Length: 542
Picture 1 (cartoon, rainbow, N blue to C red):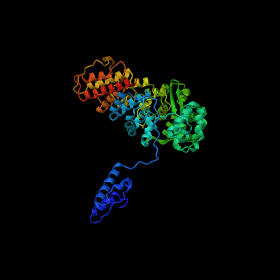
Picture 2 (cartoon, one colour; picture 1 turned 30 degrees about the vertical axis):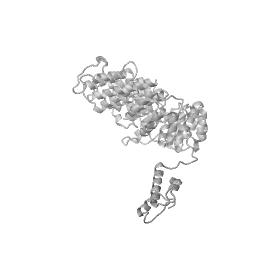
Picture 3 (cartoon, rainbow, N blue to C red; picture 1 turned 180 degrees about the vertical axis):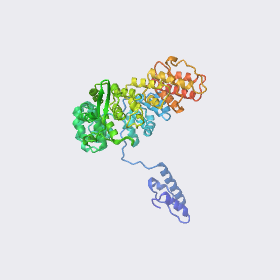
Picture 4 (cartoon, helix red, strand yellow; picture 1 turned 45 degrees about the horizontal axis):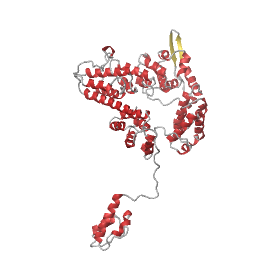
């Protein structure tokens, strides 16, 4: 047999070489180079030797191709690598607590560190499956991590979350990936806003719809009246995402024609009425939608079937108006405006528009006013039952507040008579490390949860606030174990890990208080361990 394969040998052995001799003179594949060692005078030995050669060749793999060059190696990283102990701590939490891992990676990225090479594959794999991890992982990849990510499409999507290294090579704009092109355009825009806009406009027609929508958002930096003409043209783009991006930018441009059109449409729909001593807002539904409003992005689909088309259109028209327009027109502060009665049973639609505007325009003054008026305004008491797209929830408004005001609001919510899902939502979203006032309230809440659990004594620990400072009736008697667990998990990640108060030690002491009913000892010890781990990590990277 010449050029025999393994199946040929099996067939020859099945028939029997004694009955039908078939000398093997050649082999298939890489084993062919060694066919000269086969026995020529013994067919049985020849078949067995050939089978051995083919088996070894199969197990060894294939002969490497010649003339093939590998990828260029990764460039050297200027950023320092995480200290060995910090890297070990990351490895401990990588597969246990994705939220804590994201916190530690964010701290490392902010401090300018990159992840060591042995951790990169695991971090990239984790970020592939957890979208929330991607920004934090991308921030610590460094040159080596981005080089490694380029070998797999799913890893590359993680790396693309972070801005790639800025390069002045114009070839990147012509041949680079979307993230690289965006980085080049952003760098040019930061250096010369007009040049960035002109570069984008020059090749606008040749870009794909997705690329146009992505690259247009770069103009947010350095946005000025000089960009208005180009953005007005983009309002007529065939891609909906491009039109939406252009409208969002024009809505942020003070004095733009888009803002003037939005204010003009809403002006007759909401007017000041009544006597100076008893003012109110006279609202009416719009008659319809003109082509210019549709071009400006007004009139999207209703977010819920229970909202009428006219009511939703009123909300959208109010939301499009620059919030400063209302204070200028009515001569009142946001807090004075939002408490005014609204005629025509349209208070919910009007307040929904203001809430949408406050979140879109990131206005802390209006967010604070709407949060203060929300629960007390009799005409909007049940509006929170609307979907979030039609009624931004309190936690969305709270996200607009300055950090100190946001923390103070979360502390006030927890100081009420019971923990509520809304309070926990805001607390969870409140960035850490928490300021002392909020940390004190949370510790008092944990103390109440533990000491007033069934079978526990109400003993005030040494670290807790004085009785006068403890939130009144802070014990969440209506809270479920799930709420308590969420409070504990959030506190473990947000209580300060460094500073004058050792919160890990305080929680350990509470866990050892007598009595401390199950499952609280284990929960508190786990919280203390988390805080201690965070402290050790932060000490390594400071």
